[in-house]
Image (cartoon, rainbow, N blue to C red; front, side, top):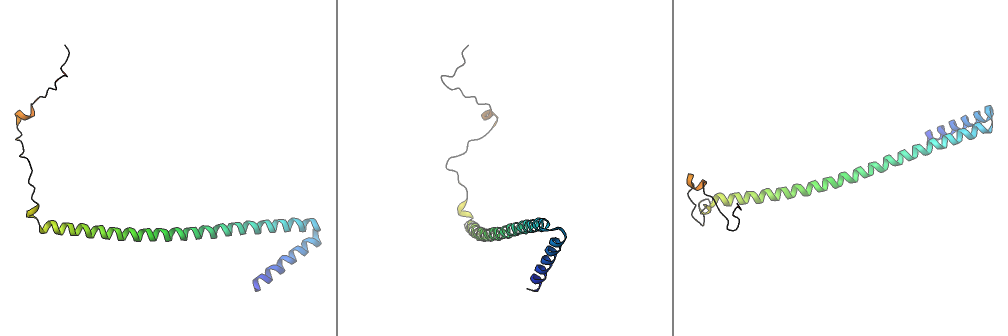
Length: 123
């Protein structure tokens, strides 16, 4: 409160001095300039306050999303660990047994040519 009173008194003395020295036009120009600067400072102050609020809200959203992602990752790792435990426990029962016998691969098998009926070359 003390600073406000000192500020208002200083502004009043400056305006009185301008009125006395230069007249009403100088006082009007000073008032318009002072009000314009005050409005600009108010606009920048409100913009800064609004940006700060938006950043806080965004940070809260990010923290909430990170917490839920961490919880989901923990669940996935636990499920994978349980699957690996069961795999190790039942190691012999999961041996791969193909349903059909495999064909032998040798040099003759690599040179086999296929001919599709109806696609003979026209000579």
